[in-house]
Image (cartoon, rainbow, N blue to C red):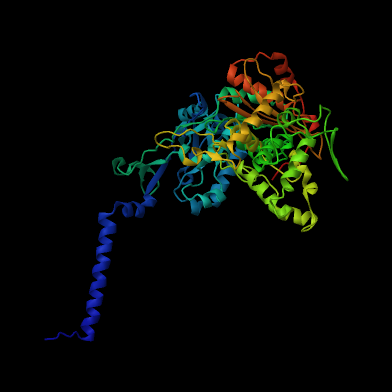
Length: 613
């Protein structure tokens, strides 16, 4: 037997089903789900944000380099404000009546939007000011205070490394919707890189208001309150004492010093000079205009953002490639008569014995030697043409970490530049360039660009005899294990068996006859180093030095890049070697050298440039 519904009954059934669905939904929203009931009463509720304490930042030895102090935001609920003692509030906070009037004018213009909400009146006032305010709170109806933490810096070093925290703007909120106006976030350095760990989680207290907006007590006896969760502490790889010492050496100089522990890739120091003084970090908005207009660009982190020619330290890479390609041995000798000349091409060099072998060429930093080496690599008959040989050379260079970002956790890291075949096809025309056309690459000039972090990584790679760990500045822990990116050995394309020859040359540079790095000798430490002088079309040459120590089982690798500092042995080598001496020996015996470096003033040698935007 079949059952049929009339059209009228069908319509009634559909209406009944819809009614049941709506009724069930309303019952769920109004009775079962507290979230919706709370939302519907938002006009009667006041949420007071509880800001979490930001995680501390510690150095590798457990010394606190960033911690917190309690400050207060003075809040005002405009609809609850009645006549108050304007002069009293001005006296407490050092304000002018005009400031107060302008504040309330802005509230009036946004009255509909604000409703019964609270707005910031003053931010991050001191505990002393808050106490004075609390004693006279009865004079200021509609005003209250919210506690929050502000940064304190026990160690006067590492401004660029640590970075600063400031209030988020509209652009930041659009990219990070979990943040609201009035929240703070790390904008540079470690504070930015590890914001997700340091920031913690906000809480709130919910109060119930009457029809006039007056607080009547905790909503549901605090059942809807949420506790703030403090941010996690972070242990860095940085040696705070070494960082501070390095910054004293770099005072009144423009450039960078980067030190790495070769066996782990941990960054020991990351110095950019001139840098931001830590005393300015806590009130960055107050000093921002002054810092940003400084012609020496203290906000510009030269350690990872300044990509410049490596100079003669790059000879180490060309030597290793020559060994791997079979066009060079330890005993290969080339002549030098104060340079290399071939037709119209001339690359100058300083006076030294000639001819010399591979270790001696490193020790004496012979330009002519590496002109021969590069030409033999590019003109190797096993390649059909120079483009093929060049591409192979480029692969080798990039395997040392050049030409791309290393992948460190330092914000804003640049990849530098290693030229391509297209670079020279555009410069000279396809098929119209040869090894002599790119001879400047032999000594780390021309189209090459790398950061001081790249150079420190090169020193660590040679110290390890052929591999590196991606440099990083944070240690792992049980909650946040170290990312595998930082625990994997990155091998170059050069066989490790060739690296001891380069190490021998770097050791001779410090201790051998005619070596260019004698100034880097550290008492009781077997050093290996290589000087560099990078040509600079805008002023004096840049002073460059990379080193590691001890020779066997190295504990530290350093790169120093001093802009407009002249020869590598003049400034970069003394600075880098003092860093090594401080780290390995704990004290400085070469006090005369230390005094000369500390008193060195090179700012007048650096062309004043417009600030970077």
